[in-house]
Amino acid sequence: MTKLPPPRAIDIEILAMTLWAEAADKPVRAIEALAALVMNRLKAGRDPDARHIAAICRAPFLFACWNRRDPRHAALRAIPPGDAAFAICRRIAQRAASGLLPDPTGGATLWHDAAHLPAWAVGQASITEIGGLCFYRAEEITAPPPRAARPVLVLAEAS
Image (tube, rainbow, N blue to C red; front, side):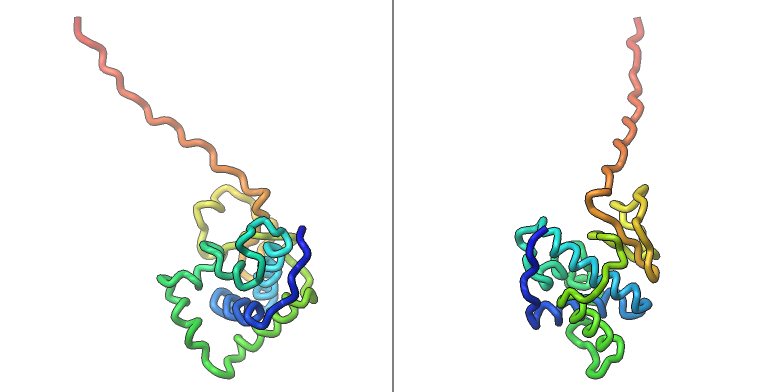
């Protein structure tokens, strides 16, 4: 584990935006769980390019809302002023970045919405499900079993 850098204003804002785009329609507990997951990834320090919360949030494939082709990406640029869900996400982000948010995920570093099963999660047991979100520890993800070899048809030569 690495020592956490002090939270920057941009980290809190990017985390709040991520939480809003990915889970604003979920229960508060699920939003808190996603924030805890980001902090778990930061604490793990496995990715040298992700030394700050903002970099974790925008890492490829972790949060689809930062993919320019995702429909939620445009919404990130147009969060309505005074949006109640965004205010909640901002408070949760502040608590997480300050180290005041307990981790309800048991150390999870991967997640997906329970409504969609990504290929990497097939056959994997989640460590917990909170508010319609499934959480996993990366180190517990096993490789899928090898595909069975296709049968080969061998033609015998006529003699």
